Image (cartoon, rainbow, N blue to C red; front, side):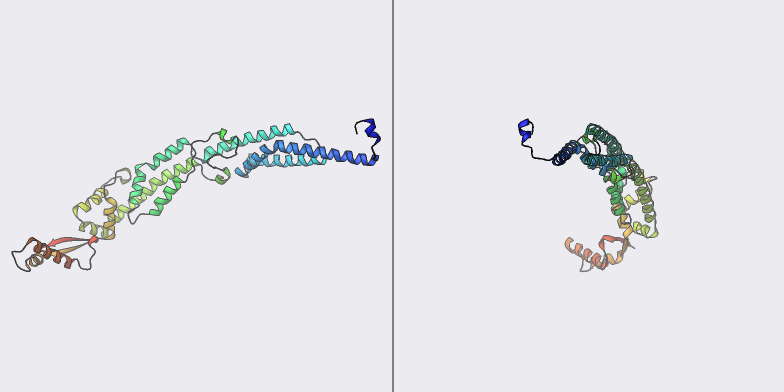
Length: 317
């Protein structure tokens, strides 16, 4: 009704017009609220996901929750017509929270995720001669595969990210590596974990070398070593003379020789006169094949019910 002619056709009472004006005001408020929500939604969605990423007790999380509650209250009051709403002010406030989050996340990421320098240090530790010793010694029966595997799993499991920078958080509140600070809350920093595992490696090797040396010097092992061939004994004798096994190269074949000694080696003495009598059985002269067959039969009889892997032969006068 925007002309005198149209106004003549108005058939509404004053009360009906007042109701219509009130409804129009309500519709305009709802329209404004929807526009404000649409304008703030991207920033609010970012901050909502960011809030779930940080630990609940983090100061930023507390400020973010307070801001969220205040924002919702302001929108509700706008919808009821109780107050105006400062959209530009809220956009600046949400952007400030986003920038604070980026700084907080970046600080936590550098604490709990290995960066390029620390990841390079981990690579050097994994390639260290101590790790090679750990792998070799773990094949000896009395030493622990589980302890070796646990150490390797722990150092391999430290989260690593060589590409992080704050710019990666422009569109998403988490790094591409998937790090979420809430999952690391209260734990050791990544660099501290690496330090402790480095120290733990020294401790494991020291304990293992002490246990192996004691086992090899035991009466049972010494009996087995005495029964071994000179070539079989050589790695064990060389190992037991090392002043600092953890800082030296282990003798070749140590693990195999140690397992033989610790599992037990027995000797079987072949009496020389009985051996000669066995070789003469059937008459002399004889062919090479016959002599070999007589020798093999005599040794087989001496080895009956014995394990050839843990038995050594010697001659007795």
